[in-house]
Length: 172
Image (cartoon, rainbow, N blue to C red; front, side):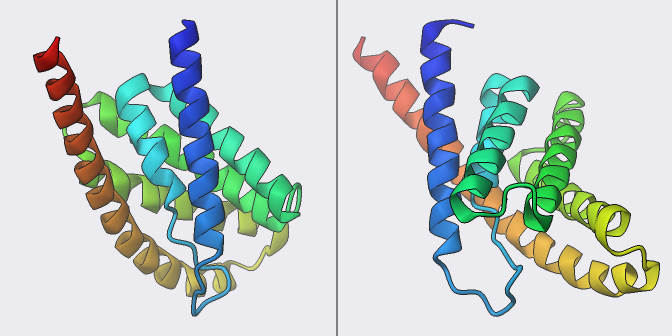
């Protein structure tokens, strides 16, 4: 990996961590509800640099974010790790077949992030399938809404980056 790419990935990781921190400042009606703004950076990284870079950004964000919030190795960390790995893998698989755009990939990522979290909760914390099945529709519905919002943000950001890139190329 070239030095320039390392700097870009470091900048993307810093952006993801900053977005994660910003998101934690937003009051939510449900304590565990998060919008997943950092996943915007993950999806942009996936489309620009591929699976390894996106997974690296996700893991850095989860590790540093959990250390900053005091949740490292606790339930939120385990749930975030499971959700993050599931979502990046699912988005990468969908990205490779070249059928889905950013909005579709974001929805897939949101669904699999929530699925990974539910599986982690069931496997590690609550071995009560009924409780998980009661929570699942609520979590998946909220995840769908945030997936749409994040997907639209990715579309806007990617269009803006393309315009900036075109402007740079036209001036050279």
